[in-house]
Length: 135
Image (cartoon, rainbow, N blue to C red; front, side, top):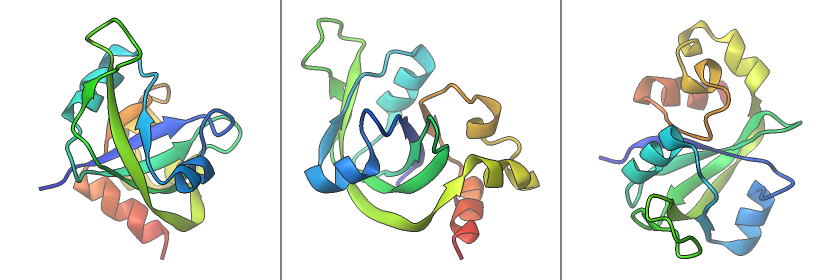
């Protein structure tokens, strides 16, 4: 069964628009140990929420893992892992961090608890709340 994840990106570095334009990308540049641990657990077909950090602070769209994790070919350190992903759909509107923080059922969501973590799992319960917020 596919897992759900949230990947953060600074839109001035790489935005959801860039992902849609490129149709596929290698997600690289992750150095935090917990984020790397999470990235190594992503599997082919897993769904990934793309979150714009910086001024936006919002979930913008949905992507899909199109590879298993593999060592970053640009780095000499085998611990540095990357993954390939493709866009699935842009959300009809962004889900802002402010909105997320207002939902009591999301107080234990890593996006709220660990705001600096760049890659995190999303539980099925949290995923459902986020999907419901779009309706």
